Length: 122
Image (cartoon, rainbow, N blue to C red; front, top):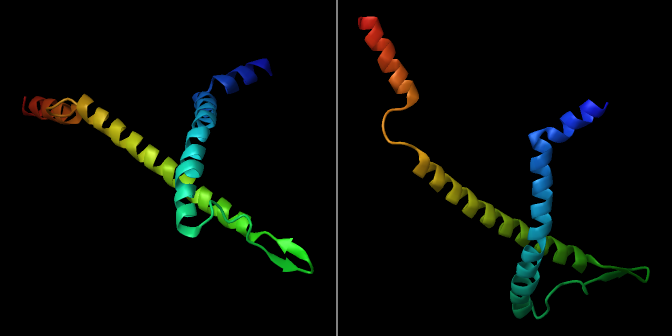
């Protein structure tokens, strides 16, 4: 059972997942600051309030706070957009780097095909 546990921990997926969780935890305050400090303030300038939490209606003298759902949904959409743009920029820089690492000239398959054809002509 100990060997099974070692194999489980040593899998690359577990390490990648752990790194992702740590990075997401560190990245969350940045996104929260962007959404709450900038985007929701723009919404406040447009609608007069920084959130919609106070919106409600009554059912049998019990308030139903639908404004909290609206605020949370807007916040989620902007968090998702921020993460999307960060990942888009990251992937663009990553693909640029990969393009720089690609050597010019024929590929390995092209060279092997050329060698095969030369040997066939003999």
